[in-house]
Image 1 (spheres, rainbow, N blue to C red):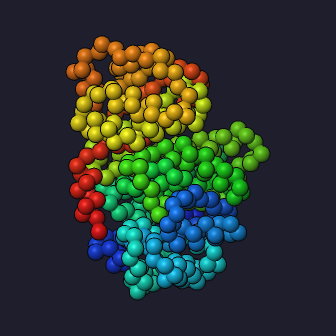
Image 2: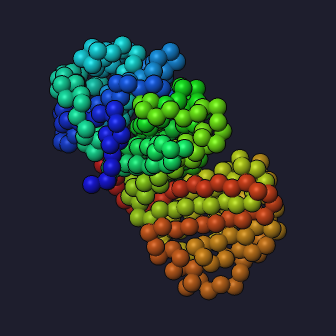
Image 3: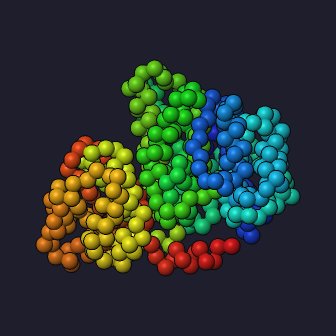
Length: 394
């Protein structure tokens, strides 16, 4: 079995079937009792859930030591009672773990606008806290899912000096995926000792390269957050740029892995789309172009239908007038075939291009030929399955 977040020393997790959903694991506990730092990135949605607001406030003055997480109910747009229920989840968990309520974050995901079944949740929290030192990271990964088809997890290692640092994570997300700070629920743990400020800086950078370069349907949720805990087992030199860069690279790798798994499991998806932009004038331009292509419904449907309509790509690449671009220099590749060279279409046979679309992963490379900036975005095709899933979700 693949390594999970609980394969890192000092990290505990478990999940139960509490009755929030009609069936399946739906309430989980992530517990890092000796955490030395915690950082998070949150949705900017105007209707953000009380779990987001509460956890944001906790992180301003405290280090999180635990997360109580439920699926099946977003507890969003639920008024004062929703706020009280979030606080109750945190306070009950904190009391049973011997923590300050501000050391317990709350995350919820699921249907918007319905009150939480607190009788089920309160009973479930008691059960979870009795098994607070369980090492069931894979159970937790399963318990946070909603319309996802598969659990998503990652485990990365890197050498910093003589020490082996570890970063592990789990995530959920299948729909309502669009760049807006965090874009889903994600929970990461590392065995490194860092202060809160540096961990936050590193997480923000990693999210900008991964989750914020992800698109399934251009919609963003009310409940999105990604939280990272540092257990403090191994200290690294926080004043050494080389060591911080090594940690950053490992965290980037973990977040990109999780983001790609989300794109691959997009609602109704049959193909993963990877858009690589190179030689752009600015990093912001490279990001924007890559996301425009991944976001485009016309590109998504063309890829699903295995239709090599390069006109749709040109449309998506050039539609933002604020992006610096020279149409006479651009080169576009579909897989390993060049379809646009110096701004003009090549005479490559349509049958060859179609073969590049008959794979589970479609790679589009856009060479702007005007600078040194690069960025990569991930998305998925748009299928009838997306419609079916979302008309049935209630």
